[in-house]
Length: 382
Ligand code: PMP
Image (cartoon, rainbow, N blue to C red):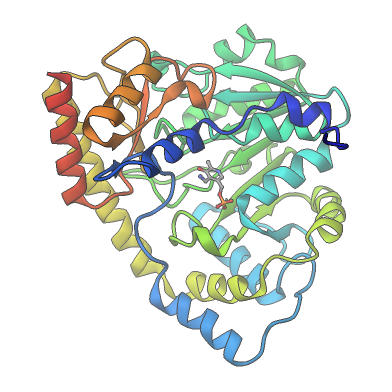
């Protein structure tokens, strides 16, 4: 008999729907996984070397709670150059164990019990659980394929998002690959100002846009003071296993986040911070090369779905496409596809409201495997 009673909050959150597909796929042979949300590339060599070098020099202690000063300075310089985001390295940046920790800590730092958090969906799977664990109340706001999965004020109004305290955005979007331009973000920013919403903007795919530059909502008028921006090293630098990310926000928000972070984590992994510092200083070419490869794959996958007559929204960012499921029940389709062809994709429902009837197909996989996977999907659909 167990003598531990898990909290009601943990009971409210089901296990990750993506994991279930991984587990199924792991039991099979000859599987091509288009299910994963991580780069198939390895971290740039110079970043790995910097990590090794830091170990050789015996840099095995904690760092400052908010991260190494040199790293925060490099982050401040990079986000300013790339996205026009002007943040003070001492007061407005915190380095975390992945964007994941930054997101979790932000919810815990900002939410009081019962605070409402509007989450634009389909979206990355950790926001709703994060809100629940922090005692908040998630409000799912489904975006629509007709709107190219961009959030609109109509949609926000239709779901009473003005009554929420916080709005969570993820552009470039996982799982749809949608992006939002400055013009498209402007009415969302106005809505946030009018309704006094804090915006949590997960921009971890900011480096991965194709043909357009990324715009951060924090750069729109009146938004910097009400926005928390999340980014990290997992996607652009292929550093998922090093677990390093960061948040940018006004001083009082970073102070509140750091209050939790300093007790729950102390500091982000030191070795990873050295790798990240090198990545910011030396990996521009490696990032550009990966972006070129992703774009080639993106166009290939989109053209193959078009040839098959499968409707697929034209993703412009991240490394996912989000085609309509050939069967109305996307989960049944994904399961049958895996069973019969060994190709793993993720049913869109997993990503929340608005994802139904779709499949998330990741192209963070080499072109050769993508070719084979698309051929198998074509044969299966026929
Ligand atoms: N946000 C989004 C949108 C993601 O797709 C992911 C990873 N799949 C994360 C955050 C988590 O990133 P990290 O590895 O930095 O914790």
